[in-house]
Length: 198
Ligand code: GRF
Image 1 (tube, rainbow, N blue to C red):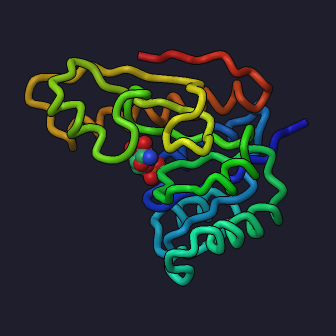
Image 2: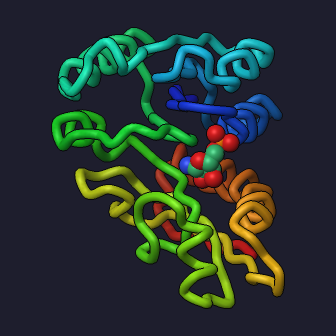
């Protein structure tokens, strides 16, 4: 049975585009059913619409500090699409345990570091400042621990002389666009073995 995939974004949605295009390329165990953004003018919303994927906005700002109320509305919108899998793709909201337990076991995220290193923000700068010789991205299952769930895939790149956070981010993004679709194809058929690229 084809798995129904909802994708959460907050910005440009380049990872969302890679996931959708791979699902639309034929012979794929999953199909995109909804793209939801917490940011009303996120560039990814138009990209999703252009690809024929239904979109929705659940703006977090009207909910203020009431994370639970925001997530209740987000869950209501998601449930309407009846997703089997949720992919966080540049989704910049920290999720409460209530949300991650409700959707647990069927929610993925891509994080721009070689987890468990550099959970949280500014991963490229932190790798540079640490003098690391390699960097990468990770796809993991979402649990209550921020960027802490079981790792399903990683892609590695070398940090080159003269790299800045921007050059690193840009080079890594091309690998994110390879890794996430490859992991989703496996996840959608129940394959939880860890995939390594690069
Ligand atoms: C990417 O580096 C992703 O790893 C992080 O947000 C960045 C932008 O992602 N979560 P996208 O272009 O919005 O998919």
